[in-house]
Length: 241
Ligand SMILES: NC(=O)c1ccc[n+]([C@@H]2O[C@H](COP(=O)([O-])OP(=O)(O)OC[C@H]3O[C@@H](n4cnc5c(N)ncnc54)[C@H](OP(=O)(O)O)[C@@H]3O)[C@@H](O)[C@H]2O)c1
Image (cartoon, rainbow, N blue to C red):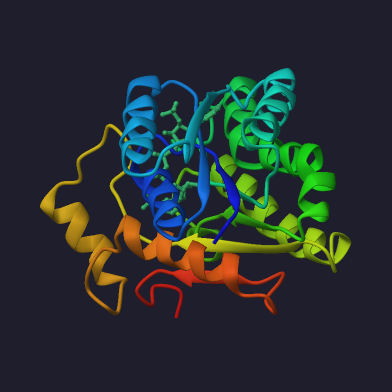
């Protein structure tokens, strides 16, 4: 794959594995990060040590419109082209009724819905030029719901919806698909108790957690699937059945 792929939130966890998977597939990768500069630089150096000039990292807080614009400009300048965008960055935390604020709304809607949509708009002409692709990372729980996460789930539902509408709007040049992960990793800064973990696995027919690699391989598949658009791949061990 002689392509350039921008992955948001790619310094750690699932985004990092997606970046590595595209890199292994031969692509040059743009590793976006916000706070995790050390991890981003480390990953970038690791990839460049294997293949020179194959990775760059760019900082941006996706809550700010001007930083979304700058991210798009800097990403385009990095290798002179962009063939694929993976909207992976996300904020995730509970917002129980009675306690949430407009700041919570802005943070959860910002990174999970507004930023992906505006980043797509910024990169749309370039992605058209390259007959590129977009992959939005949503969440299997938009169909099953989880308690106290109404804002997060509304944002991911919106992201799922724009995947379908943009697949039509941006065809035939750009393919737009989504990946809906199930239980892959514990949320950042949280360790599940054995009881919590068992409860989660009870709802998963395959009786195990997924891995970052399961999501990354699905992303590479969708990137290369030339006759698939507007679809969501549920990578959830059967949880959605
Ligand atoms: N983990 C799971 O089991 C699971 C389940 C369902 C869906 N998903 C979805 O899969 C994707 C990856 O999951 P994950 O658990 O690996 O994600 P994560 O660790 O929660 O977040 C990924 C990155 O998003 C970036 N980010 C958050 N807010 C941002 C902002 N305002 N501006 C810029 N970057 C921001 C952070 O970058 P910095 O660290 O650089 O600040 C963070 O490292 C997400 O879209 C998530 O919703 C995951």
